[in-house]
Image (tube, rainbow, N blue to C red; front, side):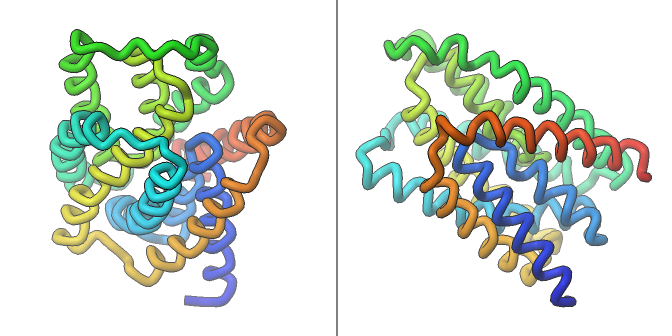
Length: 251
């Protein structure tokens, strides 16, 4: 691995980790980057999960230290997501590269729409938490399918989780983020094992990316979200659009 490639991975990982902590969508940078470096789609998918796994372990520890951690609710939503992620991972491994890349590009455009419109913010202005027993079963069903998606692609799943928890629970953004990082880290373990068993992981690139993600997570946690959110949205709009077009048209 050349020095240039190492620097590219570290820079992309740092940006991805930063975005994941501040809001989400970091995998929309790291996944295409790994594919552009020549990894088959399934291997890029599995390799990216090493960095995400370490990143979410750090995030969960931070939320727990700050008092924003509900283990029972996290497990209630995390277990269906874990089961779904196994299904999604098996689909991702067996899918041809050209089909996977087109699906990823389509997902990137959908997530781009969510980044621009930010529909969850209209509901998040209300601080009252509305989660009640009647919403638990729909929430568990929803998170099974979120797990399927996370196991399949993972890119942009943070935005999907934020939207789902906002609509279903009405919780504050702080609690939603604490649930998000645990659920992603929880199901990530099972989906990563599927990729490891199938041999779809590049450990050197994955651990290098993990260093970048960890640095980005540290930087993101020290960044003022209220001042940086607008600029992050602009950066995501440009980079996601460019990468999605490249995946679709292979130019």
